Amino acid sequence: MTVAYRLTPELRKSLQRPLGTLIRGSFSETMTRLKDIIEREKVAHVISVGDTVTRNLVKNNVIPLLAIVDNMTMRKNTKPFSFATEKIVNVKNPAATITVEAISTIYEALKADMHAKIVVDGEEDLLALIAIVYAPENSLVIYGQPYEGIVIVRTTAAKKAEIAEILKTMESVRKTK
Image 1: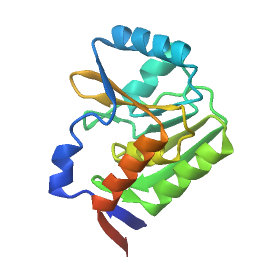
Image 2 (image 1 turned 30 degrees about the vertical axis):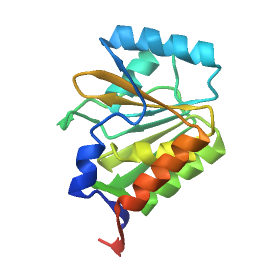
Image 3 (image 1 turned 180 degrees about the horizontal axis):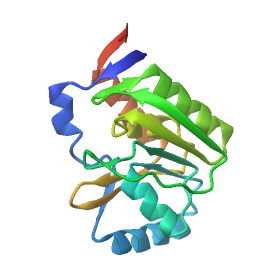
Image 4 (image 1 turned 180 degrees about the vertical axis):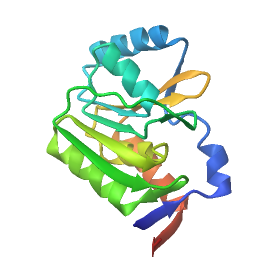
């Protein structure tokens, strides 16, 4: 497996802040507000990163174009769940890294424009960055902010450029591990 990026200690702290709009509240409150945003803004696609967020979206009839999960919540195993997808792909992505395999899988899944689920062996958190970069404009990438709510990232040209800069500050590895 080839690691493309590794999280630096400095970047770890800054990435704890939401990359987009934080919606605070219970699952039902955040889902109600999210559904209002999706309807009002005529969103192209929804991409979810994280098991709890994905599960809550599906329970509320918001089926993500792409769901990225690792069958863990707050670093504890969670029961895998299924929903209607056209494709399921497994990738390896160790904690605090972004692998070449994960990058290409996210890119291909979004390019195919079909409902897909990526199951990560490792950790999916940083893959939100890749999803933002490759998601079609006017999409929403949604991930959980522990103990607070959900974060909604609108995929605009400006946001994609901001995330590209974050990736540039990550330790570029490009080694086989």
